[in-house]
Structure formats: C-alpha cells, structure tokens
Length: 184
Image (cartoon, helix red, strand yellow):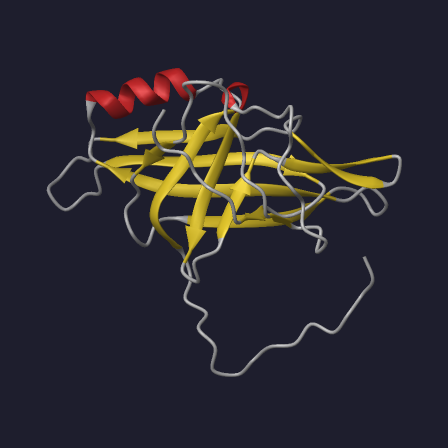
C-alpha cells in the first residue's frame, strides 16, 4: 500500500461509542475454507464470513454509552503490533448471562461492534503476511479478557457485568461489510 494524504472534512459526524447489539461467534463455527475478501485498502473485509452448517452469530446487548473499541500500539521499536480491545457493559445479573460467562471464558471468538457512523469493526479475524501477501486468518482469535460482575451494594450502584474482549494483531480491528448470519 502506498501512503496518501489523510484529511479531515470539517463538519462531519464524529460521535463516539458503539451502538446496537454486539455480535460474537466461536472461531470454530466459522468456515474459512473460502475466506472472505480483503479489500485493496488492506483493512476492510468486503466478502461475507461463511459459517459451518447450523452455526450462527449470537447477539449480546450492551448499555448505551459503555461500548467501545480501542486499539493500542504495543511492542518494541522494530516489533510493533496492536492490542485490540472491545469493552461493554451488560446490565443486570441473569442466569443466562452467568451461563454465557462460564461457557465463553476460554473460547476463541470473533466479535463485531458497530460504531456510531455505522461501521462494523471485527476482532478475531486478522491479517498475516504469507510470501509478501496479506492473508486473512483465524489464527489470532479474540478472547474474553475481563468479565467482572457486581450486584451493587445500594440502590444507586450500577448492577451488571463489564466485559473486555481482546486480540493481538498486525493491525487495528478490521472493518467488516459482509452479512452477519443470525439464524441457522
């Protein structure tokens, strides 16, 4: 990729945070025999992520104003990479959520969040270079890094669970323009 000017258009929207539900799937449920298409920009997946038979993406609600995706440049001077994080809060304390936490704690994942400009960002599908070419891979999945829960101690406390999902990659979370299959 060649460098080019990076400019800002005055007056454009730039609201922060994630909107709507988040989507997640165990990596083992993704069919990568035909990987999706990586756009020429090197950061956008334009093809659909195919799933194995009878598999689907799952939704998880998050409290508006608590969802964010971050990328942090980490590593030594000549060995940089990105630590990508998706953080959100689920309100309440239900048996379904506690069961989810128990099942997902050691599960390699892909997670999608939608920003306030409508861009879907994905953690868990990454790019590696093979013989000088960018290749999409499932070999750097996302994992639940944190899943702290609280019942709160008084009426004004926030009751719920704060999740942090993390993956390490050669790039910030990719943009995803494909379909999210929610039914088998």
